[in-house]
Image 1: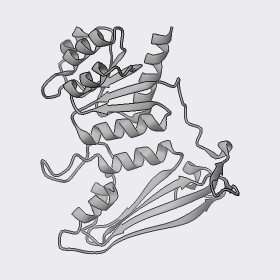
Image 2: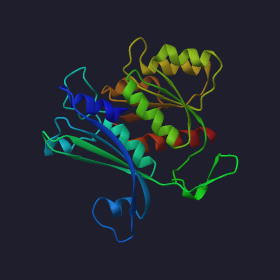
Image 3: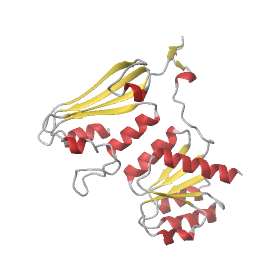
Image 4: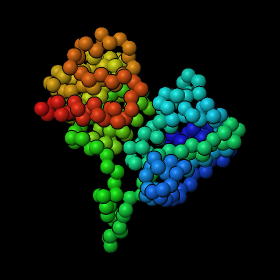
Length: 258
């Protein structure tokens, strides 16, 4: 969806959007096209191509950086491509972009092919050895609270890919309502600067409902003193890589278990 929206925005006067699938085999001695980076094996390729404005080299070089965007205020956060890239990489794959100014853009998502064998009942059996070897961490429930829908979506998708059960809320009151309904969380990942209730106020209120709830602040808020209201919280500064967030959640859960 992110790629289709980007293609639409790149074709304000109309154009053609082409979505295609294919396969790619990387050999151990393969070089170029990311073969060494991906490693040998069979990959499924999903490509999304448009006939739009394209990107000059200096924009193409930064296209997948979190929060990088050439759009005006209110037209985009610059998180769409970085979200696609993060999900692909966490699944053992990669993303490739081919583009030039005035000649359109093609984004190719490469995902490692999983070995499957059909059963007589028509369902599919998956060979566990073919799945990506993600660090699952201790299974636990994570509440992600962030008023930015794009950021929240990246955090939720990333933590789910690492094996956590993830719930989300758009602000403090919504998060507290979930806890008031009896939902028990193992850790809360909380933005700080949010409307209606900031992260520190939410953390204090959440702990009244669930004493000892571990808090991970994921925020770009610069005032360090503001976090002192929750002295035992873990603090991560945005922009945050999903692997960094997952590691903080894992360490927080281990400390709580100890």
